[in-house]
Length: 89
Image (cartoon, rainbow, N blue to C red; front, side, top):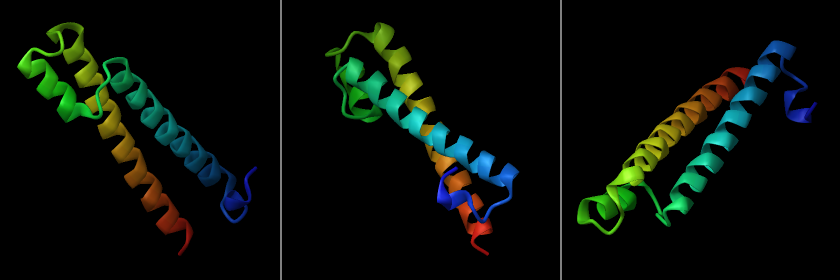
């Protein structure tokens, strides 16, 4: 196991490792969703849909997926931050 986990109880280390994996996967999957439509971010994708530059279907579903992934990514980062603060007490 990574040395960062040495001072943590095994169950806490496993939980942090799973959260780290979730952070990575949500970031990479969001990037793939946006890259599929050549969008820099959710806002530009939505603007492209609204202007008609990008077809509404399935682009809106991609927009929603990217938003969910971004929200999940942010929630996982906040959870990780809290776990690390608790571990460093």
